Length: 288
Image (cartoon, rainbow, N blue to C red; front, side, top):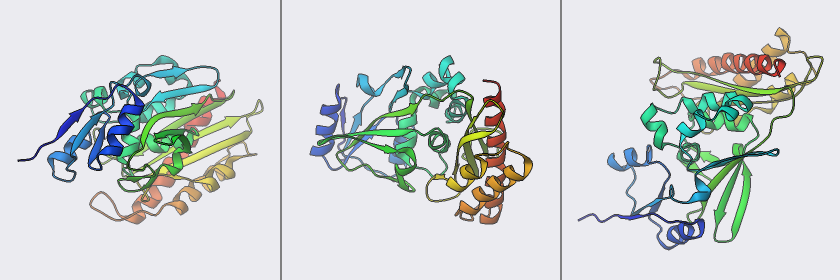
């Protein structure tokens, strides 16, 4: 008879101890992916470590430096936070795309990251916004950029005894804004065929002084496309510049062909989405 433990630690240290002492334990941050995988037989944990009762993992902290988002904070709490929507509208757009209202009540950005789907909407948005992942383990904490967190489909840099505790974002400078776009086969509740996030900073004259572009669902992990961002800096984002950035996004893509779209289609579409994200982010930046 299968026996699976349920643990609900009240501290990060307790959660790390439970993970270190049981190689088969899995973190339960919301369960919207893990429980589906469990029922399908894809994962057979010896224990579920529910981290939603750890105060440091659930909550939104915003100050003059930026945002600290607890890894198990429900997506719904992010979507309902007015100041987050003002400062990072693109990120909130991406979070709002996580499943249904019911899923958003349990699912979290941290869980979305740790599930490590190449098509995860929040990952590209986080990368564009210069997010960093705070990881705790027996030796203390380490911080890695969001673009380095996922290493392949379903895999991350987390060691067996480590836990993602928070995602931190620097407060956006003046005249900076973000945006996220994706393409899905249906009108809602589907995963991306391709996705793109962008963050753009403009000076008083409208010249781009900083930019980041990230793409998802077109490679084994979401990608930071340095060439796309660099193409924008020093320009007023004219059509020729936008076309260069779109071409860079398409060139960086390493998609597969499957029933959702061919590799060639995904490569083309991600360039289109990157351009739209840049244009939207720039329009928002001009309003600030």
